[in-house]
Length: 352
Image (cartoon, rainbow, N blue to C red; front, side, top):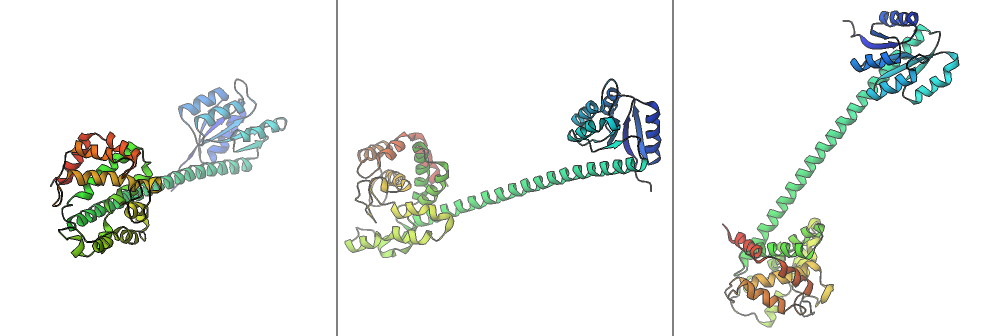
């Protein structure tokens, strides 16, 4: 089977030269079109682009250099060979800078011309294939990135669901705190938004809130589930749960950002909290946010040992304790959260 013919546009103002070139390329299997000057060459190329253009440099109406520039503007992949006399060698060299593949000195050596044409077309094809290959690689990288992003997001969602389930499980183990972690999680994120917590820290806050009481896994049921007041010795044991929680999650890389909240969620602004008696801004921000929303939830949800008060009464009490139990700036942020949003968070937490 014969190989398909290749298209060539021959541009030369000398009719005799055009015909000679025509016969050379025709006999080599090219499909030829002819143009008598640069302007006609541009018109012919615009009407039907060709893989290869062979043009004289010195022509009336439009020079070969101008033709080269316009053809390259129309098709950056076009292979162009220029023909030049000895007097125009410098111009021919300049044409290479403008994108010509090669130049051939007149009088033309047929074998040299055909070899140059063949190499120009091979180079053109390689450039096209390399660009297509590069585009394919970029598409594959983009697709792989999208797949990885989707997988990461799915993994994040799974982590979130697992942590929420774990938080809920911890709540059901502690008398009267069903859905506590879910509510406090919602309140904390709303407060963080009002406070202006950077987005990259919100995930750690969310994890810490959901896992704040994970250390209670290590507290004996006789103490954790005791219906009446704890003795001083029992309180001493109970107060170890932040340290237990810290030890549990600090070994898990993606949960390390939650450690400050788990370890410090019982600290108070005035330094009277535990386990380290931190005060002021020495308390991690996430723990300061948690302290406010945890107190709000405790006051607004009935438990066996306490009766719920209204949202407004709870907000007033939190405002009163700003500067003692709570960070005043966090309190201000919490008080900016719309009551309607707090009510919606509570409603969603108890929905079936």
